[in-house]
Image (spheres, rainbow, N blue to C red):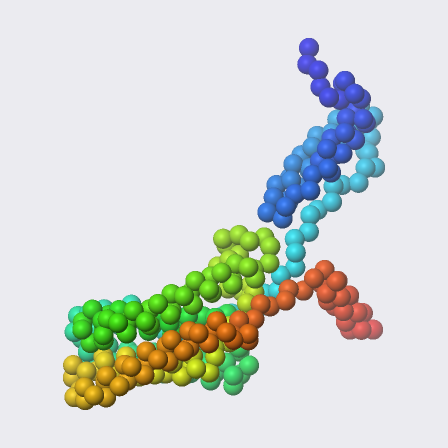
Amino acid sequence: MRITLESTLGSKFALGLKWGIMSSFRPSLSTCTSVYILQRAFWGSSTRALEKQEGGKTDLPAPPRPKLPYTPHEQIYNLPNFLTFTRILATPALGYFILHDQTLPALALLVTAGITDVLDGWIARKWNLQTVVGSVVDPMADKLLVTVLTVSLAMKGLLPVWLAMIILGRDVGLAISAIWYRYISLPPPKTFMRYWNFSLPSAEVKPTTISKVNTLLQLGLITASTAAPILPISEVVMVAAQYTVAMTTVWSGLSYVFSKNAVKILKQPGKGQEKSDVKNGNDAKRDTKS
């Protein structure tokens, strides 16, 4: 003989007990969906058993659906961001051309990458297409380009190893800092998919003035080093440029450490703001109907 919870305690009491047990949970946001499914399963089985015994429908309310936090999204699919990603895709080809002594294709692709770097910023400002993602990905693309070219030129003996170590050390430090700031600024739930979802802005990076100057000098030195096999460039000029870039690289790295405005963690709207937005939307609908 099978003894069930309903037969032992009574269907109504068992139903209340199940609902009380399920309601006592306080799930985290990452498990709220699973708990909601379990609530529906317990609720449905107990309600059907009660309806079968009483021969009618119950008036008990359905379990509440959990609410996820409101997180703003931004439109990241625009021309400036597209140009930035093409620069990222062109970077491995640049390294390949340098390592295989194909100087002319490397110079042509490097000039094209520089043009896209100027265009994406100009288009974003001209047509108001600036995004938080662009403020992060654009300098990331520049650093990736500089990193690949620095390693390739150092391997071919066109750039001193000590200078390559300074440039790479600064970029690695900034990359680790960017990963950390993204993690601490991302609103919950902190999942792998949300971390790499660039349409969820959480922090904004503002390059310092010396960092912009340093990037320009680095690209100039890299371009000259790339063209060195086919263009006669004075050794004195190259050495002076290398020491200048070393100084600005260290200076720009320290500027991010001591500057308070370099990284800005964006404030996420709370429940009150979300309700206010919904209310304003309803008011707008009423005005449109009237």
